[in-house]
Length: 357
Image (cartoon, rainbow, N blue to C red; front, side, top):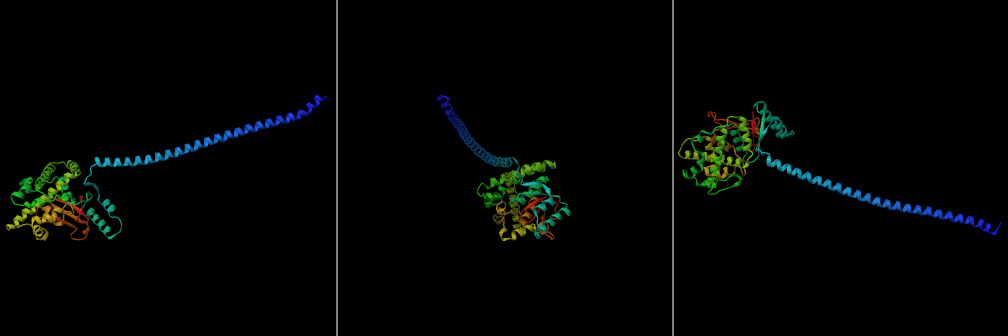
């Protein structure tokens, strides 16, 4: 073997080992690079995913809040439009009497049982099938009476046909010297002053105009539609009620003048003038009538005066007096008078509803 051949033989394995190490290093280097690349890619991807999830959560929260906000605004607008365009009737539509009783008087208390029995009495014995709820305020007795006068198309009282009721405020002042009328109060408005006559005149003129119009309509359904329009206008309503109050005051003043001349007067007025708080028209106005529509409604004696002034019989079913002689009363109780009759029902002598036969 030549020296060159021996040297080559000795160097062969060394070169092979170096070549193997270089290959291993290259594989390791590629593996490391790949691993680092994958790790970097994962970190980038994880960051992107985290950012996307955070954005999605934020977007969902925003959408949820926006949905809630829009829902509240939509609800507010719906309510606003309903209040603006829907008639706010002060006398509601008819509802079944027994269903109303069951809804309003639940439970087994003595009073609830009494009321349910009273409503059953109205249904079975008096043939009242429905009820119209009336807005609860201090005008509701006047509202209940006037609604029925208009809806039934009742005509003027006989004394109103003989006089121009629009001129009655001035008549009290100039013919009868009732300058105290300037202290008349228009319910919660509490207005007094020299212009009271002008305000009263407008109220009475409106009453005369509306009453004339309703009494001239023969179609029942048309009167009902017109009542729905009128009794959804609070401003017109209150003027009509103040006109009724003044009509009551005028009648009290007229009867008081008759009493001073020793003329025979109805017993209900003798009872009225026997009270210290209503011994004359001024005290009646100051102590009773001025409060009507403001802090109180009509008392029983006021109901007598109202019925007498309008020449109608006001039959009232007093449900809290069930099983007593005072369950059914009439204001005024004048069987010999051929006056139209209207009916009311009350649970407490303060608030009234309209029964429908």
